[in-house]
Amino acid sequence: MNKIQEFNELHFSEEPLFLGNAWDLLSALTLEKAGFKAIGTTSWGIANSLGHADGELIDFDRHLGIIRTITENVKIPVSADIEAGYSEDTNKIINNVLKTADVGAAGINIEDSLKSSNGLREIPNHCKLLEEIRIALDQNGYKDFYINARTDTYLQRTNPLLETIERGKAYVESGASGIFVPGLKEDDEIKEITKNISAPLNVLSLPGLTNCNKLKELGVRRFSFGNALSDNVIAYLEKKAGELLEFKDTSLLYGNEY
Image (cartoon, rainbow, N blue to C red):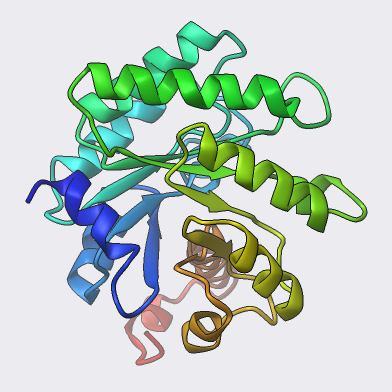
C-alpha cells in the first residue's frame, strides 16, 4: 500500500483521523514519534517559521522545500496545506499541486478564499479548478491523491450553513476527496453537514471544539489543530527568551516544567 492509499484509508477507519499539524522537520518528527498516524502541514506555521504572516506571502518553491523535507524524513503520510494554490492562474495552480505530489505528499488542502481580494471563488469557477486538478493528478500517476477542499464560508459569511452544504456537494462532485470547514463548531450544524455531504468532513480545533470522541459521534472523520500547536511553541519560546534576559540566569532552563 502506498502513502496515498494509506492516507485515504485513514479517513474511513473506526476512529476519526486525528491529524498532527507540523511546520518544520523537527515538529513533524516529534508528532510522528508521539504516534500520530498522519501529518498535515500548517501554512500559517510554516510562514511564521520563515518570518512571515500567513497568506501566500512566501515563494511557493520555498514553501514546497519544507514540505519535501518533511515527506522525505517521516514514514507516515503527509498532507500539504497549499492555501489557495499560490496563484490565480488555473494552470499554475495545477502545476503547484503536481509539484506537491511529486515531492511525496499524499494529499493537499486547497481553499476557495481569494487572496488578492476579499471573498470566495464563485462555485462554478472553483468546481472547474477542482475538476482540472483531479484530471491532472490522474493523468500523472496520482490516482486517489487526497484533495481536501477547504471552504471558508464560516470565516466569511454571516449565515453560512446552506452555502457550505451547497459548496461541499459541488466540490465532491468535482473531484474533492473530503471537505474542510474551518470555523464550524456548532453540533447541530456539524450533524447537518455530515448528513448532507457524502465525503469525510474535516473540522478545525477551536476553543469549545476539542474532543475527538465527541466529534466522532457527530460524524466528523478528520480533526486537525492547525497553527494552535505552533502558536503555543512560539509563545513558550518568547516567554523563556524574555525571562532569560530579565533574570540573566539560565537555571530556568533546567526546571521540570517541560
